[in-house]
Image (cartoon, rainbow, N blue to C red; front, top):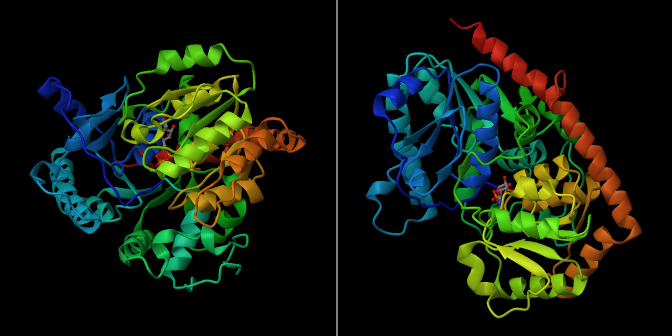
Length: 463
Ligand code: UDP
């Protein structure tokens, strides 16, 4: 879900300046998510659930994002900081983007924290490890938040330690501590030798100061990743506190993780009505998240595969991708630019989720007991997809042809397997099992809920 791209934005909402400042000054926890939808959602859910414990929480965004985002009613305070985007006049390289983000956000975050008198801790996204020093220099505690599974983080750690030795033979098996055997195509594409080293360095940096972080949080839960967690616990005092989305849902009765929307789910009503008119367990929900861009040929195969499956489908095609499906036969489906994904997954009509296996989507599917057809694209997604299929057993992966395209027959067959076949019954059973375990983790006394309670108690003890 972490990406090497970035998103642009527009006008922050007007608020009474004095009122806003006093609220912010009062914050006891400042959260600093990486500015992308897949990182903001779990961080905002965590921030909101901390307010349910009586903590005052400010979540930072960037000025540029806050200009286009829509904000929903929330108990947290949102504070835009400059990431220097205002001065950008030319397209930037990925390296230039991250350098600018670090330089500008460091400065504006430091200035903001200097104005706050009550802050005790800063929770920051693990891909911005430099925030820890800014917190510590001000005598504040620093908690790193991994919006990724522990298993993927373990692979990244082994990569940093030099345990991955590219190039791998296509048929080889990669054995790493505490992980099931991996195939070369599961490994992060940015780690291949023919890719620039930038991605590896950037990902690697999150381990450099991990020993100094006061807390290490994962948006995951113990039973889901117990083996790798036990291994990890020998290195660092990691705490699982997820699914953060589910904590919020359970405590607030909300089926929502949309505190800050970078995309507009403006067809929500149409979506709901369309789903209401469908039979229980009949619909395939299709989404590739906020970043993935599929090739035009792949979109065409997908459209044909969906038609051949004979299932009604709800397909999220972001506005920037819409051109790729022009002139295709999409009669059986509803196409929307963005939807309220958790609400869709909670709908009785949804039988399966054809997903890129971004970590939030995976957790959201699991939290609703919805089985997956896993069609991973990049970054952490191939590992997530492998776990979904081989370890957690609540989904089936699709196989791409030699050209990297997943054909229409393959897509239709996998959908039918999940929706109609005997295998589908087993997948659904496993999805329900993980749903129960996820709910257990976030209920009072559950592993994730207890870890959050301990964090809150520790903060309360600080004068
Ligand atoms: N999402 C959504 N509506 C959509 C598609 C996605 O609300 O139409 C949300 C989804 O619920 C999830 C996030 O966007 O919380 C996507 O995160 P994920 O980690 O799955 O993928 P990424 O976008 O980071 O690749």
